[in-house]
Amino acid sequence: MKNIQVIDGADNCKYRVFAATESEFELIFPNGADLEFIEDFLDRVGEELGSEIMDAISTRPIEKEDVKGIHGTLFYELINVKKKFYPNKRFSDDKRGG
Image (cartoon, rainbow, N blue to C red):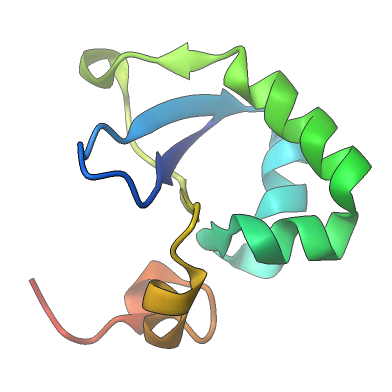
């Protein structure tokens, strides 16, 4: 299993972490990517398959104190704000520091 942190546009900053199977993770984060935007994921795999995968993952939340690493970050509602910083969909793309 791999851990995915979901970051959305909410004001509360309660970013959840969920467990994904290896195959689910590869569909969300192809070609070694470690971040993705939900809009791009759904465009790539289709609404039906994307919804099935996200529904399955949503049944596997992990409490933050139990997280042993984050393998991928999935952005919701932030494509217009964050995508410019991650052209290769790798966390290391963002060179702004901090």
